[in-house]
Structure formats: C-alpha cells, structure tokens
Length: 151
Image 1 (tube, rainbow, N blue to C red):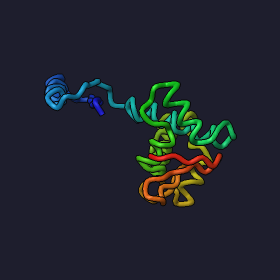
Image 2 (cartoon, one colour; image 1 turned 45 degrees about the vertical axis):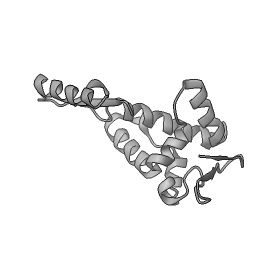
Image 3 (cartoon, one colour; image 1 turned 90 degrees about the horizontal axis):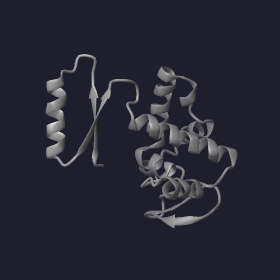
Image 4 (tube, helix red, strand yellow; image 1 turned 135 degrees about the vertical axis):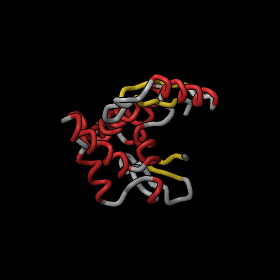
C-alpha cells in the first residue's frame, strides 16, 4: 500500500509530523495527515463499504462475486469488499464496526449477516472459510450463486 495515514494526536507537534513524513517518504510512501478521531479515514470508509456489501448480500441484491466485481470495476477498487473482508478477517471487520458504532452512531451498526458469519466461525482466509471458501488450496467460491473462481 503506497499510503501512510499520519495521525495527529491532541498534542502531536508539527516537528513530529514532519519527521514521520520524512521517514515515510524515504520508504517511498505517500502521506496524509489526519486528526485523531475514531477510525481515521481509510478504516471508516472501508468499514462502511464492507458493511453495506453485507447488507446488500443479506437483501439478495447480488452474489458476493457480483458485488465484488461491481466495486472493483465500477469504483476501481483493487479488491471487492468481500475479498478484503475475508483477507483481514470478518471478526476484525465486526470488531471495527462495533467500535465505530459505539463512538459514531447508527450508520456503523454491523449488518446482521456479518454477525452471523462471525458467530459461525466463518472468519475468512484464516479459518479457510468466510464469504468465500478457501478449503480447496486457493479455490474460492461464493456462498450464494454457486460461481467459483481462483484467487
């Protein structure tokens, strides 16, 4: 990832921010300076997109494959929300949403389907099964729609 979010705390000095920017630039990274607030920028947006994808799946709007494809091709994201959720862990996504919901309100309420996946132990790649099934040595298939594809 080419980005480093630099989080400016309540008493973070300008000198500290500049030092971090220089280190990040030496690592070949782009930076943004964000004021400390729950979720920062990328985590908040990612949580919303991933959660909305679960609401859409729950409502039968489309299959995981179709929703992921629409986001990748329509919004130019490198991964779809279900692919990303399975990669980072659906339990991690749920924990982030619960935290953001407690701090920032209703728009971050986790989708009930996401809670069901986590309760069932379907956490993503780390357990071999999340939205997609990884039990066949890298093959994965969506739970709804029956399509398979290679990761």
